[in-house]
Amino acid sequence: MPSITYISPNGTSTTLDARVGDSVMEVAVKHGVDGIVAECGGACSCATCHVYVDAAFQETVGGPGELEDDMLDGAASERLSNSRLSCQIKMRDEFDGLTVHVAPEQL
Ligand code: FES
Image (cartoon, rainbow, N blue to C red; front, side):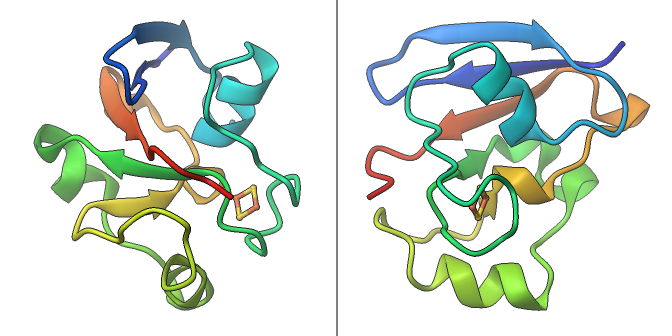
């Protein structure tokens, strides 16, 4: 079971087990991780699930798709080169240990 570590803007770290196929957003919401709002429920239409993928996993996880790319332009927090919408990252075994930094503002 791959694990995900969420680092909140205040530095709090939460590590959770994920099922392969679950999104990084779904795991966060299910366990009440602060800062992942996910207003649209994973439809890639709200940009309130913004995270910054840790540098060590950026290449493995890859960049956003076309729609996600457009949505990230409207995210409340600054868009960086490692920005992703967490509902669009579906967990795979090779993502085990993935660390994401929750964006400071989602709305
Ligand atoms: S939950 Fe709305 S874009 Fe990710």
